[in-house]
Structures are given as structure tokens and as C-alpha cells.
Image 1 (cartoon, rainbow, N blue to C red):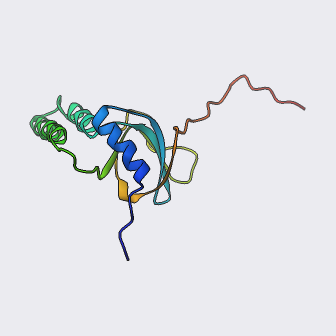
Image 2: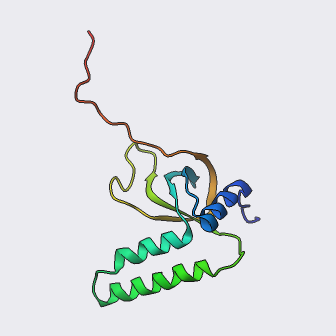
Image 3: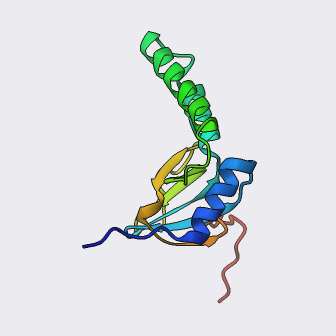
Length: 136
């Protein structure tokens, strides 16, 4: 069995995000699940994770430092082709209508090689209207 190929268009969009701070709303099909969010650079992803740990205990602070170093290393990575896609404000849909997680600013990281398909745009949840009228 051969390894899955990485979609060259998706790889191009990830490279644009990583190198030029370009972002876009995107929805990915990943092994039967749907992941929807906004692209963020690898550097931005690691910076966001680092920020999430920086105000905790000593172990959290150490993790924050390591993630901050990872973000700097990504910047110095050169022209190596991206292997991962990073999303902010991500939601994962697994067959039901409610995403997991349903709230919060979630950072998501996935292997480009595992993406089955994608479309531009984010899935937005329908808002229920309390003023809807029923016709008889």
C-alpha cells in the first residue's frame, strides 16, 4: 500500500499561510470527519499554544517556553515543504449536527497527508430564531 499523496493545491494554500501570514476559512474532510476553521501559520499555531500555557504553574510555564521555541524554529525552517495544516477557531463534526468542541477558540493541527478533500469557507451553525412563526 502506498502512502497517500498530499493535495498540491492544499499544500500551496498552507505554504501561503505559513510564509505570508495569509489566512482563509476552510473546511476539511479528514477520515470521515469534517474539520472547519480558519488557517493559521505554524508559527501562529505554536504562539497560540504557548500563550495558553504561560500563566500556569511551573510545568505549564516550561511547556509554554518549549512551544515558544518551536514557533521560532518554524520561522527558521527554510523552504521545507509543510507537512501539517493549522486552524484556529476550529470545529470538528463527526456525523451529528453539533460540533466538538461547541465553544471556545480552538487551535487544531492535522497532517496534510490525511486530508481527503476540502472546500473554501467555514461551516457556520444555524441560529435558532425565537420569533419563528408557525403557519397552519
